[in-house]
Length: 287
Image 1 (cartoon, rainbow, N blue to C red):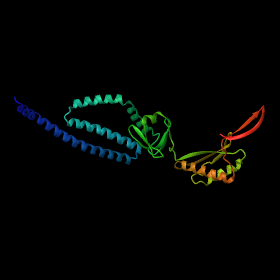
Image 2 (image 1 turned 60 degrees about the horizontal axis):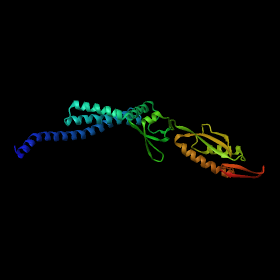
Image 3 (image 1 turned 60 degrees about the vertical axis):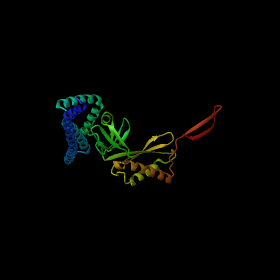
Image 4 (image 1 turned 45 degrees about the vertical axis):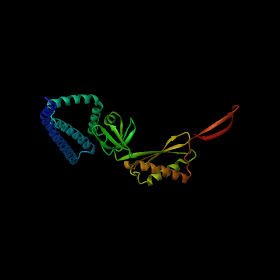
């Protein structure tokens, strides 16, 4: 048999299989395109139903991502079947892949479980401002996914934290309630009048609209420090006004104390110099 006959036999036997594979590949591509559209539509429908039932944003986003992942896994199985892979082979492959992924992604499964714990116990929700104590990460919760929680910082940085880390460490939910107590300490000189300073601080707090006036305004002597008398202020404000109030109080106190002649002393130390057992000089200097 010459080369021409071999080539003719090859095409006569292989061409139908190639044609069949190309047809199946075309159908698979079409199924993939339609399947992605269906998954997106189902995810949107599922999300809409959850929102109508009053589910919070975090739960909705988490379950929507779960539905999307499951849908893509099922789509992959359908595509493999369309390409001619036998069901038994697919099941065996999925089993092997599942075992491998389970071993390789133990941390991922822990993050998945952590996401469920967050959604069920609700230590925080989307929109809350939290502080993750172990790594000092903080920001507003923007998204709770299957494996990660996304924060947005005040300076617009994006922080992605594994869910396991948030369930294993302490988390401070700053905005769990609508009000916060602001504590400010200010030092005055030992020669200044405490009552005069207290009256000025009370006037500042009463005139600041960000201070909640029906809550107790507490002004007290917090500490007799080395270089100053530390006065403490404790006032309540709405959570959104916490930092604006802190900044405005600091500025108002400095201006009012300057106008009233009340000094805010620097840290200082008195140094006594001795010569031949007698004090020869006393000198004060800033630390």
